[in-house]
Length: 252
Length: 160
Image 1: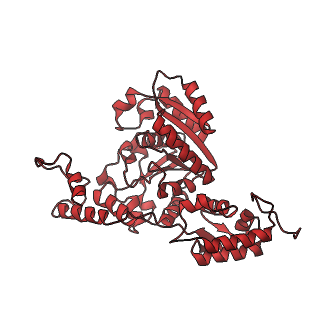
Image 2: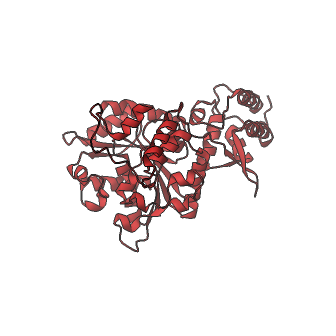
Image 3: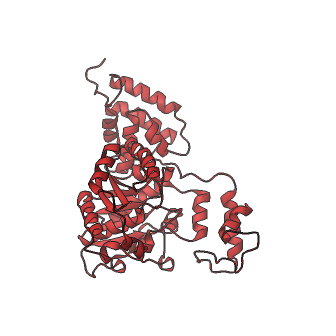
C-alpha cells in the first residue's frame, strides 16, 4: 500500500522544497521506492536540489498534462544523481515541472486538467511500484494545491515561527480538515536557535490542535548549501538530519 | 420511518436514509457544477455528499457499493444519486470490470482571467524568435533603458 504525502506551506520561503528533497532522500536511503512530483508549476524548484538541469529534463509534468508524454516518461531516476550509493535498494524518482518561461506562462494562461493530474499520481505509483509519492505543492490555498491535498493520505505542513505564517497556517489547517485529510503533521522550520524547541512545539501544537513532527533550527550550513545539494547527505550527523530522520519515522 | 433503512452518517438531525436521498437529489440539482468538481466544492458541500466525494477523490475512484456506504444509503437509493451526479458532470464512468467504477470529474485548474498571460506569452515568443527555444530564461538587456528599473521580464509585464 503506497502513501501519498503532500508537502505544503501557506507562504513561500518556508523550506518546502528543501524538506521534500531531504525527506525523499532519507526514505530512499532506507530502501523505499520514492517518487517526488513537483506540482509547483508556477514556480518550480525542487529539481535543483536533485541536481537535475533543465536540459536534462527530457519530459516534464507540463508535457504530461499537455498530452505530449506519459507520466512515467516524465519521471527521472535521480537516485545516483542525488548521491545515494549505486545499487541501493531504494530508488528516487523526480517528475519535474518545466522551468521554461513559455511553459510556465502557458500553464497560467490555459490551466490544466486536474483529473489528468490525479490519474498521473495513481499511474506513477503503479508503474514505478512506489512506496511513497511526495507532492511538492505551490504555497497558498489555490484551487490546484487544495486538490493535491484532497488526493493525499498525509499532509506535511511547513511553517516558520513567524506571525504571518501562523495566521496563514491556521487557514490551511482548517481547509485541510474540510478536505478530510486523514493525517496532518506540522514541521516548524528555520526556528531561531535562541528559541526553546520544546516550547515552540507545545505552543504550535496547542494553537492548531495538530502534532508537530519536528522543530528545525535555522542553520547556516543549510543557507550556505543554498540548494546546491541534499542537506542530509552533505551533513549526515547534523541535528537537522536527525530531526528529518524522526519525521521520516513518523511518515513511514 | 423505515427501520430497515441504513442510518445516514454525520447528519445534523436524525434523517432517514430516504430523507437523505431526497435532500441529496435536491442539493445536487441546485449545485452549480461548472466543468467538473472544484476543491471549493469538496469543502463546501453538505454532508454526507462532501465526505463521499472527498473519499472518492482520495481513493482515485469509487463503486456504487462504496459510494452508497459513504452516503449511508442502500445501493438502490445511491444509484439515483450517482446517476444524477453522472448526468450533471460531477462523476464519470472510469471502468466496467469487475463492477462499474466512477471517478470524480475534476474541473480544470483555473485559467487566469483577461488577456494578461496571452500577451505575456506573445511577448516571450517575440523575444525568443531566432533564439534557443529551450532556453529557460531570457538574458537581461546589456544596458537597461534609463527609465527602467527592473529586469527584462518586468518590462514585458508592464507592457501588457
